[in-house]
Image (cartoon, rainbow, N blue to C red; front, side, top):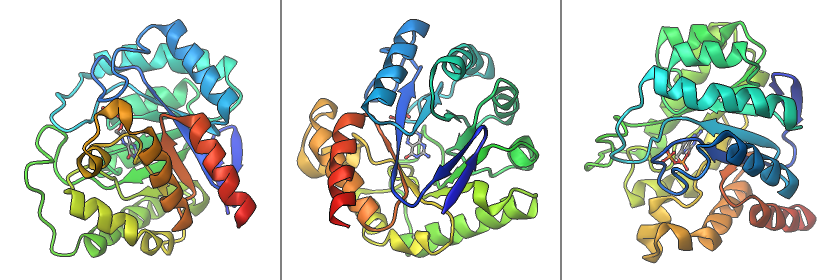
Length: 273
Ligand code: HH2
């Protein structure tokens, strides 16, 4: 399975690692660390060295309870870093944004992928990416980051998230986005309880059947903290294990903070396969 991703065509027959680069003051695990452009570049170069196949730049925290960033704030955080990384980093650069205006600007500045935790839910978001050769990641979220974790309810979380991803895939296809540009993501932790997240991981292969590469973001998330009673800085081992469980069930991209450790685990997985 291939993924057309801006300047690159990625081979998804083996799992790919997306390294997280949060240029935010308030992300839940690395907020404030990579706000300076040189720190962001160093971290991106390090992740590529450690085996990242893509870098995902985020300029707005979407952790539960986070306040939204304005377009101006997000633009100022993301675009200068994108411009530097595009020149200096040898892998595709993804931009994690929910704002159609920033999607357009990021594509203009050379982003290879747009990662929308809002799942391309508006005509403006779909129009922003439709005619560009970028990859798109459509993620499921229930509610808004500010309030999404206050008692989310599903009758059947696997079925509901599956229907959502199917509808978003079809919406993108109808707008002219080729199938080999589309990535789907069930959105771990975005309006889901621990039980919902575990059910999604258990049943992940259902989303693989939609025919697009599936991306998962489980790294350091609070579901791991709740399950293990561990603060965010002690969730690396569980994050690597979660990535492995997801890949075992068919995920083709894993969005992680701990690239080197995830790479080792996935190398082992590939050798055993
Ligand atoms: N999770 C986060 C952000 N973006 N994108 C996709 N496709 N899937 C995810 O699971 C996902 C995502 C949240 O994690 P992080 O970026 O580390 O934190 P914050 O939102 O606080 O910046």
